[in-house]
Image (cartoon, rainbow, N blue to C red; front, side, top):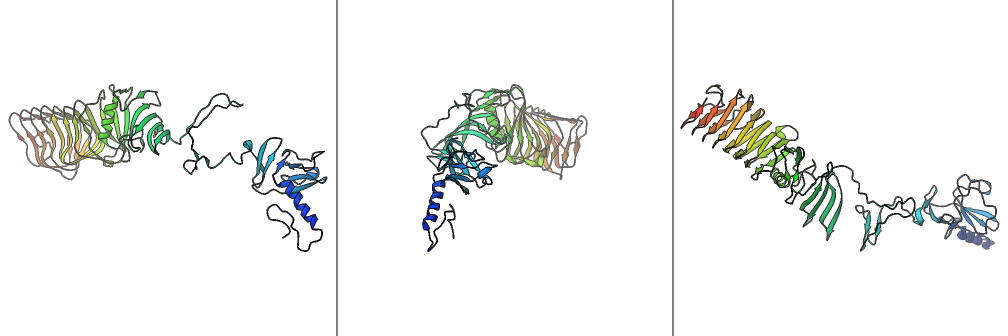
Length: 470
């Protein structure tokens, strides 16, 4: 080997004559490239009167004595030019610009204010270690960000947090012992949220500022947001009842129907507008609504896909109070209880509703109302499909009820205590077994003359104590 592998310094051979020549050549090379500081990196031709020992980075397009030496280190030594080929990673201070340059294997690259790499740099840790998640990590009593008072600075400063999509998060998180306690920002949607937590797991939202209007709401306070238009909330199997329900995402949607209702009823004044719960495919527990909502004209439960089989709600969907609840594109199942149970309220069947097995499909308990706004399906039997007590009212006009699989009923309709059921120009498709009707105590079932066998069943109905079937 005639020279060293990195700096290419000449090596004195064994038994070499005039060893001082080789030794001095190596010293000259070391003098040129160690602690490298060059006059400039902008010259493509040699200066006319270089100082002894002066060094330069040869610019592109070199001419004259530097011809063909682009990018090399040119050192003026003993009245002549010596050239050195840089290797990747060599560092040189350039005097006329006061900048550090690094050779990247192909060219010399200037570094800002002498740092070895800032644009980009993979990780930055200040008094701590940065990692793949926290690429900038600072351990300090305080962190200062100030405006730039040198051109092009204009005296202002902004901290910018940018997220990829509406359903992701851009926020500032405050922690205690590495566990979240407060958060503010765009958390799961594009509204601005301020929320707190006692344990880093369960969060309570204090303030929401709506992106479209700037309207401020306080979900957990006694102050209510007053709606100015109909509104939709979302329910998903991967949601959370501590969310605000405003976006169809795991970070935004509610988890349960009852949880959604409780949060909505406590937070808003509907001002006469409808509120919809858009329900993603999945299985859900029933909704229990015992506190009447303020100002909501109708609370609509709507299967997101429009396919009833995609959303199955199990248990007694219970209304107790002056409110209207409707169902669309859902399957209702309530083994040993009632699929819909209403007391002093209104339920509407808005379309594509399927009744599965239950003890009672529709129980209008006390001054309750059921409007059939669209056709629906009965897929399994029950003790009663409709039970009506205490001045309740069931109304269907020009609707078809489809029965599949010949469901069995103790009575298809049971009406008492001045309840009224009205079937105007309605039809039933399919067959059922059991008693068609049981009417008593001044209740009325009006089929508009459709006949005694109009209602589904295999056995004649009964009328007693002031009841009527027409």
